Picture 1 (tube, rainbow, N blue to C red):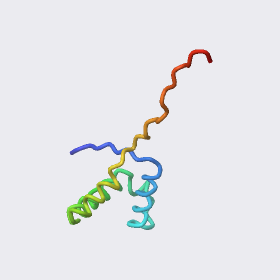
Picture 2: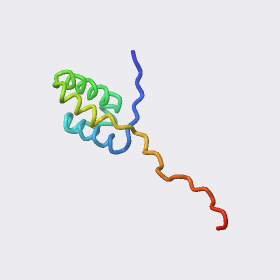
Picture 3: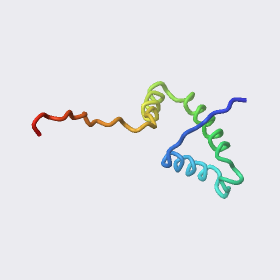
Picture 4: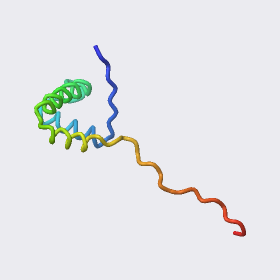
Length: 85
């Protein structure tokens, strides 16, 4: 068995929960279908979809999903004190 840790922001988890609610209507997602099971099934479905995609489609998907979760770095340049002020 392989253990995987997933980190989602709130918006990403909302997208996953909405997809699960569409696939399994009437299911209580946190009680009957655990978060890990939802992620496992959707990940495997995504792998199948990725393998059946054309090379151009794969590149487009990777560009869209390849962004980092880290916020961008500050762009403020440090200011040195100026003499006489």
